[in-house]
Image (cartoon, rainbow, N blue to C red):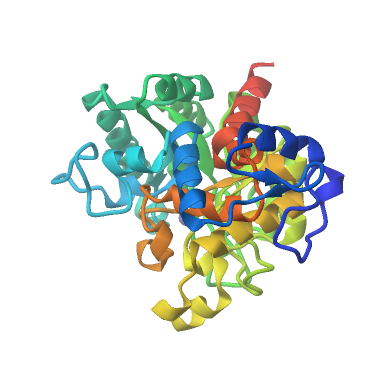
Length: 391
Ligand SMILES: [Zn+2]
């Protein structure tokens, strides 16, 4: 649950309001590099080279999970995931960046709903993930559960989890949920950029919207996802739909790739603070996206490289989310391979998580908090949703 002591966004960049309990072990573990200044206050090293080295060491050692990578949408039959790709994601760069669990989005374009091709599209993209894991058991492992992901981490393999982006492939059939879960789906985002048969979209061009939140079928889907232990992803849904989801869901929900509307006023794709709190109160997590659209208002109008977000912007969005939601309710959802051209130069692909960790270290975050943000929180939530289903 949300820690009420850290519910108010502050103006300072240092997470001063975080509990002393969470900082002390970080200091103890990093006594060589972090000097202490009074009880519980971590002073980051000033030398950039020392900071960078510590960031690289932490990314190599800590479990890192990325909640949203669009690889299946841009995968090419001429590229091998374990050799290299022209996108933002492949196994060699994931290894270099310290990534241990990639949630790969089986994205279904909204047009597929009208065309009747949503189910086959989802199937094709899920197959792509399953086949990659099968073809390279020495380097990759399919994660159907947090336990699978931990086992892959233990054996030095990159875990791949399947997420479905857009509920269109359900095609009005509740039994498809069990089918997709059995195929490996860990989470389903109900909607994409247009209202669909489940849910209204925050990016729908028609402001009248189709449902005023969830459709009657969408409401049934929430209950069935809870029963089956599939994580509900609220990214792309309207505020009203998210409010209804939070009311209906008996399990924690996630935003697999979202930002904060307080940073981009008027951009409805990003979450307002009250819904960030709502997701946290469900026990869930907001995974922060790295694309400049999510982070910088100016970039959305100019698309100019001068207005591109930086790794510091991502770190500050994470810090702001920690202040709103609490340290247990924040994670990473880069949107790699979905927003390539708008990524910060220092976070341009999966080899670069250390640049984000460096910024968080410089803001005073210690190892225990970083472990939560980088992957611990997302694994915990996935496990809780599954445990609730099994109750
Ligand atoms: Zn998306």
